[in-house]
Image (cartoon, rainbow, N blue to C red; front, side, top):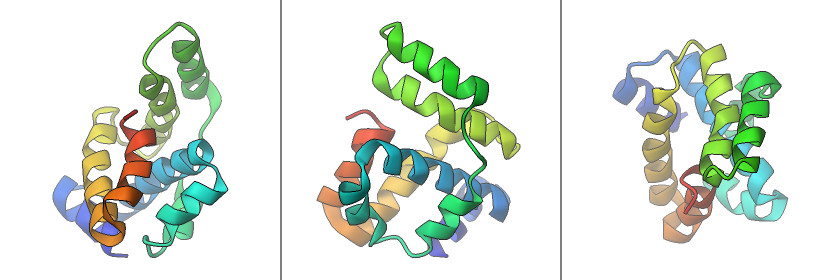
Length: 128
């Protein structure tokens, strides 16, 4: 999987961390975009199903914090990404890594699927 190789070489993370981290962000996008819009993204990313399967189960405290942050008027992307941050910690990655994964994933998706497809993903991951 080319995306995983890019993440491991650029960020110095292990393959399982890259796979699980990307999977967490794609799972988040799938939940927020819905099946139809997400399928436009997924068709350009080889192995996306395997990445999503490798993602640690999100939820628990991080998800609750994200929901609370959204209810308290925090920017939507903060609440949305809180669940991913919890999953990243399960992979042994700190919260800062989420913001390092996102531009690499968006760049990869833009190269494969173009501006419109990466724009869909950016709506979720960057709150644009």
